[in-house]
Every structure is written in C-alpha cells, then in structure tokens.
Length: 146
Image 1 (tube, rainbow, N blue to C red):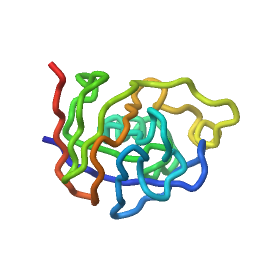
Image 2: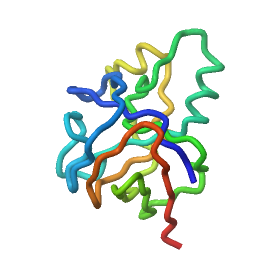
Image 3: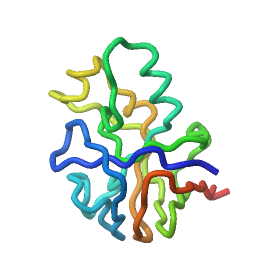
C-alpha cells in the first residue's frame, strides 16, 4: 500500500506543474484542469516519491513537487515492479498503466531548470478507467495484472 504525496497540474504541457491538495480524475480524460487531459494514453503521469527524493539529494537547486511535470508523486510502491496493464487505485478512482518511460521533448522547461529529467526513465503513464476525487494523503494500491 502506498500514499499519494502530491497532486500536480498545469495549464500547459512541457512545463513544471503546480501542487494542489485535491483534484478530480475524469474517466477517459485525466485530471480536471491539467494540460495532459484528453482522449489519449498518457492522461496522468506518476513518479515514485522515493526517486524524486533520491534525485533531489544529488543536485544543489531547490525542487518542488511537480518539477518533472509529474501529476502524481506516490510513496511506498515499488515502481520497478509496475507493468503495462496494471491498475492503480486511489480513493474510488482507478488508473490503468499504459506506458513506462517516454522520449524527452526538445525545448523542455523541466530539463532547462533541473539539468535532466527522470520521467523518460522512471515516469509511469496511465489513463483514467474510473473517475473520482483524490486528495493528498490518500492510500494508493497497485493491482498487478498477473
């Protein structure tokens, strides 16, 4: 069982996201008021909080939640065990993992600020299967497809 540490949204893609305390996950769309919402396979991005902290310890600049453009920072789940098709349950909402890692964009604000981005190697992307309200501190459960 994991914990939802941070929810982050932005009105524009390829930018740092700002933290909010709660959000609405909309079925087949993503997070309400987030630029990545829409009818596609990367509606919600997730990152391990432990990876975030490890990276933060290696650099000398302040890092806020959302710096990598991640929507959700989750603690207590081993992201190396997540597979495409797995389900992530937060409150009454359910996400389906659709992609692990990604190609980094050119001209990315995140890379300019931090120097490199960990989302290409460690980011997990999903679509909303069942919508619902989520808030910081919610329990997170990983349901493996196997």
